[in-house]
Amino acid sequence: MTQLLLFHHAQGLTPGITAFADRLRADGHDVHTPDLFDGRTFDSIEAGMAYVGELGFGEVMERGTRAADAVGDNLVFAGFSLGVVPAQMLAQTRPGALGAVLCYSCVPVSEFGGAWPVDVPVQIHGMDADPYFVDEGDIDAARAIVASAPSAELFLYPGDQHYFADNSLPSYDADATELLLRRVIDFLGRIRG
Image (cartoon, rainbow, N blue to C red):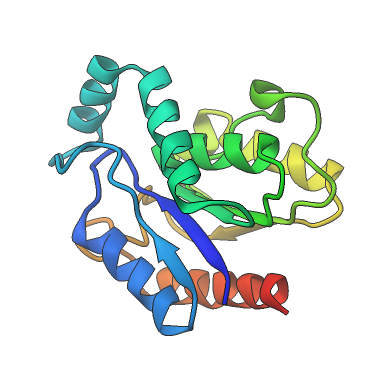
């Protein structure tokens, strides 16, 4: 069993995030889904990001750190879009991080220090025509991690949806989600084993 801390995207802790976590739980993993928005969900990315603007990115990061502190050590950190930011920060900086799964987003490693830690495997997932992932530089940051870290993988899926693995949103892509889940389950199994 792997302990996984899974951070939600800017629309909040939606039923689709919970459903994704439940699929990983069914595979035997202990998945924690902290609510960084205190129960609030939003109808759009823009509305969610406006709320993040009110909270401040620093507060979102602090809430992510507090969630990790509450769970303990030896964690895999995962995030969807906005949730990638605390997940990536914790994976890069927290002693004992076991791995990272970054979905829909990736930031340059320089945001949280120097290089990606060589002993922390990472998977990065995004759609090949997602304007957030491709046009805002996330794919470039992902490729840089893959080029520099021995245990880094980048998986691109055909399509232009950002939140493609959230079955509670119109952007959901069932086929891409199944492939994503298989890859994440395999990744967690390698960490577990």
